[in-house]
Amino acid sequence: MIEFKNVSKTYKTKKGVETKALNNINLKIGNVGLVFIVGKSGSGKSTMLNILGGLDNITSGELLINNQNISKFKNKEYDSYRNAYIGFIFQEFNILEEYSVYENIELALRLQNQKPQKDEVENLLNRLGLKDLKQRKPNELSGGQKQRVAIARALIKNPKIILADEPTGNLDQTNGKQIFDLLKEISKEKLVIVVSHDIEAANKYADRIIELKDGNIIKDTNPEIEEKEEKLNLKKSKLPFSYSIKLALKSLTIKPLKLLMTCILTAMALIFMGFTVNCLIFDKVDLMTNTMKENDQYVYTVNKTEYYGLYDQRTYELKEQDIKQIEKDTQSALNKAYMLNNNNSLLTFEFGTPEIEKPDYYMNEPAIIRFVEIIDDKVVGKLIGKLPETNQELVIHKYLAEYIIKYGVIDSENNLYKPKSIEDLVNSKHELKLGDNKVTISGVVDDDNSQFEEYKNGNPINNYDLRNYIQNDYIEPSCTVYVKGFTNVAKLNSNKREILTKMSITNIIDNENINPEEISTYNLNSITENKTIITKEGLKEVNKLSKNEVILSINDLKKLDPNYNQGLEDYSKENSTLSYNQIVETYTQNYLNTNSFKALKIKLKNIIKKQVKQIILL
View: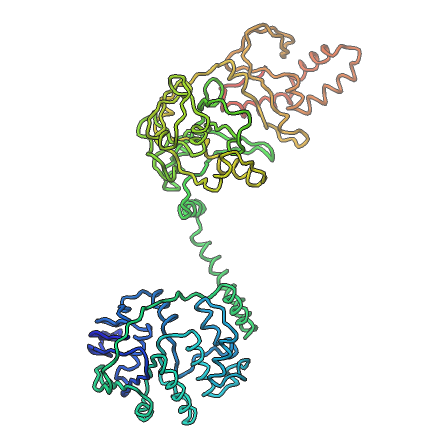
């Protein structure tokens, strides 16, 4: 049942002139029958039809369909209402010229996400006298036949209400009579509302005539109706993707030349416009910064690298002025990350001893590579618990937390602590041992690992790509811990002798014939006993080095300077009567006075001076 309650509709022009199309309409219409809405042009009948069809909104009042107020519907709800409840028949037919009769009819069902049943469509075509016309295009049909196609399209989806706007306006008398006869038959099962100027047809076919004038009802021949409630069931309007593609491809074939020219011109215009805009406003830093923010990504590694050649480069620590410049350019705060070494290894937790064969999921014992001093919470992500508030509180990633739960961790009392859950780990505030530091876990980054649940209990990860993904994309972030001031107070032990032993020179020459991995020499040793070295003046015994001195081995020279290596070989051939030690001693002493060694010394000095001040090579 349809009910208008004090419905008014006012149109307002750009100049502010108001026109009242409907004026406080109160009206009830039953569930079946043929209802004519008549009146002169401008009386409001088409407005009433548009409001009923969800094509226009009311200004005030309520429109109830089966006691549900649809006047407050949103656009998507109106789409569903029209799709399930309303069938439209227009004066201009509004059928698609590019598609056959059958395709026009089946489109209504496709919009309801239904696959047309051939028998159902065939029966409807027979009923409407269109059986032999189903493969014809609209331009091969008469006006009456086109209107029958429009009616068939409205009926196929089995709507409750048929709205017909001047359905015979473009038809001759004979075809007009046939259409009204058809609508009269349909109205025995459904509500058919017709907007028409044809008073004679209304008097002949209508079960009820409603006449409008200046937005008011001035005549209603049968206002008494049988009130029968039905539930308003809406169907979402959705055209299947595959069918959408089919329609799109078919549309492309209608005027291919025009389409091609349009595409070419549009592409050229867009390319030219994009090039012009980019030339005018392009800023590399702004582009990178805005892209990161728009993607909601706040974790990026920023390095400062100096390049000397194809395989010759070195990364340095960012200076304070570098950090300030980056913050200025990006208008973002930088959260600094630190590597902390304790006893010549990374500062990390000690875990319990795992079983003999660990599950593939726990293949990697997590290590802490980065301590990130957080300035804001954007770098952390979804959190179980809270951010660190003191310099002894840590936020860790989920994999590290799960590893602690699985195997336990050594606490500040040197006992094995095994929390029952992540919540237990966070809420217990249990002090853990981190080198010589006592720390607690205040939060855990809630990384999504739901897809790995089946592997936690021992199921093997046989897929290489999945194993690689877990290791590199999921486990790797667990190497990051978030702190607030911890790096400033952390207790770290270091053995200076071992540190000097492990310092090395790598990738410092541009020579494609030497593998960069081979150019690695532990040449910054701290010596505590007498060693014999070769100097410009000859052999010399030393038992200690100044802070600005290093020793290069003969193998170092061979790898670092091809001139030395080749020269030593030539000298050996020329002085074959001498022992190898005599050859090396004599040739090296002479080499240390050459320009080749001076060049090598300068190069090494430039490379290593970032770590050791005033390098002097002996």
